[in-house]
Image (tube, rainbow over all chains, first blue to last red):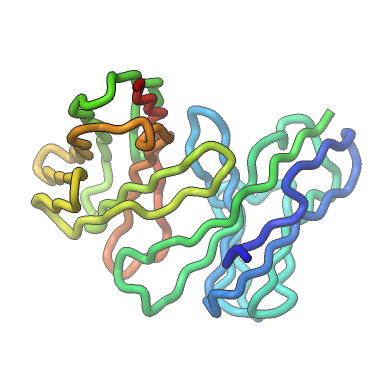
Length: 115
Length: 111
């Protein structure tokens, strides 16, 4: 099984619908992140969490919310999806002890299409 | 202007070629310079990283950092079809936690 698991892997939805993307990890890392990947733009940070009680906005948090249900679970919600939220979404984890480079461990991605 | 600039390609080379992938950056506080590799339908994985300036070699891969020019490179020797992937440069400052990614360069190595 993958260390960082995302569900669903693919989702097609309509404008205005509420969508939740879920992430769970078995790496035992405290830090979890949600990124969005668009062609030509790279990975942009949406939200990050350093522990269950810590939630922080990233570069592009508007239109998104998150919930850290446990150390191992971090979910991303789109309260009212719009077409420009069509993208590939990645969950990632890191360990504060992994050194200065802060290696990120990514899930396999959730492809979301908003019609 | 983006903090990290990377040509998205695509870059197509024949098997056995030497590949050069590059990024420029604007933030002089960056000290960690990373290369992630992303295969199709997969998440990125850390390939290698360098702290501050200099070179680092790992098998067929060499990472170079020139802080005076704010320019980093990844060289792949004897490229293989299995090297076909998107390569993302990434950077971070000391003590910070945010990793800033380039757009990624898509590489195709033809057999």
